[in-house]
View 1 (spheres, chains in turn red, purple):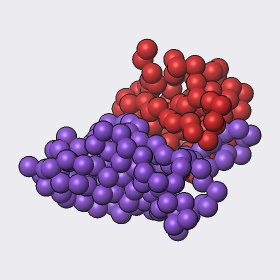
View 2: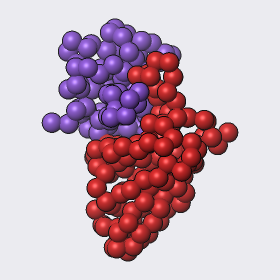
View 3: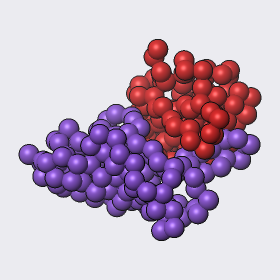
Length: 116
Length: 115
C-alpha cells in the first residue's frame, strides 16, 4: 500500500497562474484533508472532506477550491496563485471508526509550492 | 489566542535525559489529543494519542492529560539524538459535517537532543 500520495512534489508558479495539487489514498479512508504549513505556524487546515461528496472550509480557505473526485482522491486548486500561498501543502486522510472522535490522520509527503 | 498553544522552543536536552513537551488547549469540549513527530522536510507521523485523564505509556513515550487544566504533555525518556524533531500537539473538535472530527494543531515544539 502506498498510503497517501501527493503530486507534484515541488512546483514553482508565477503570480496569477493556476494549478491543481493532487492527493490520493489507498486505505479506503472516508475523510480527507488539505493543510498548509508555514514556518512557525504549524499546520493550518484549508479544506476537508468528511466523506465522498462533501467538502467544508477549514481555517484558511480563501484563495483555494477543492474537489472530492471519489473516495480515493481529493484535489486542491489555486485559481490565481499569490506569493502568500508559498507554502508546504500536506494532504491527509483518516477513517471514521466507531469512536469517531478518536480518528487519527495519515499524511502524504507534501508538495512544496513557491509562488514568485 | 490560538486554540492549541505550544512553546516553539527549541527545547535542548542531553542524550539520556527526559524531554518534557507541553500543550494547552482552549476548547473544553475537546475529546481526543494527539502528538505527532515531524522530522525536518518530512510529513508528520503519529506517535501518541490519549483520550482519558491520566498517563498513557508507550515505550519511551508517556502522554499525560489533564482535562480540568486543559493541558496535555509528552514525556520522552532516555532521549536520543534521533528524537530531534518538531513535535506537534493536535486536539480533535467536531467538524461542520455530522460525524466529522477535525484536528487543530499547535505550532509545534522543536526538540534538540545533543550527544
